[in-house]
Length: 482
Image 1 (cartoon, one colour):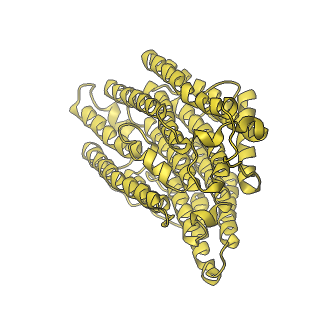
Image 2: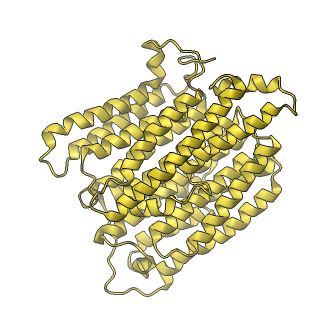
Image 3: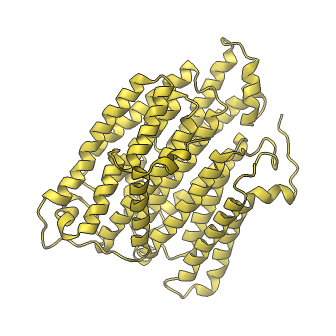
């Protein structure tokens, strides 16, 4: 049955963070009207940051409150949803911080850019807490449309337009699969709420055909989510889109979409029978294909930005390893991993922005010999690459170990071995960056990275977290207790 919940002002209390972000987006568009002649539009950027800060304060104020009583069958409560919403707000703030310095060069000074970011963040926050699949689809398409436009926001760059078009076309197919999965789910359960599933499964025999239909619905839903997080074979948009989009947008696409997509998968794992043999096989093959294809593709790359795109796809495969195990610790391990990935991601793209000041694409030649000429830059890049490779003592090692532990608890030893082998392969291209950084000669024509400003602040914060969580992992691991 499709029940219409009664919405009152009191029931909106737990959605004040999302409402605040939405109001911030409308305010940004309104305040831009008298600022049309202002080339920098710093007021617009700081207004967006203020909206995210207020939303974060409201979220922390109601940290222990549940969402589900406000909208029965519509939104999920619990720490997992709350933690994902918090991470998304921080990702939005980091994206705005990265956008300030290159805004004029990349065409990101317009109020529409900041409004689209805020609309996307608000929709993602509702998405990660959605128990109703229709609500999930609506907000999924809401933030997808915003991201399609953001990917092609720099209209002066032809590659930018091509990146947005490829992202949009593949996204349209993925949305159709997601909607088809909802239709199958409704046909089996008579509802579009995930909360009705556990009761139904109790009354189904192990050989009931409806269980197989539920696996088909799960497969369709995973196609839609797999596109967002970059799972193979739905990852083909990622390298071109990441390379063509403005770098701050690329950071947002990779980190924000991954947190939203995997948080939703983690929520689904609490209701869907992920321990079913068909689900275990499907998730296992998806994880192996994603890790292997991405790591092999990354080995051939010459551009740093394109290499990071393949790296992002590979990290989606590692995160999926935990869900494929089906252990009780899987949802927490997955969110833990994508949180660490988001920190590593923003560290990497902060460094990339510093190198892009000259306006030319960054390849291995641009970082040759920088490790000794710019020691602090070299140190930060080395720490980021070590973390992405999962080498101690970094947060990347702790998060990856947590994921592998979850897979082992679920009895997925073969998948674990394949994931470890893929981690070894990935070390080759991460260490290749360090070889260029410290072992290749520097030429006089190479540009030096430009430090300072909000980009430098983001870099310092992210590298500090990578090292702090690696040396003192207890706070990070505590986030896995859902």
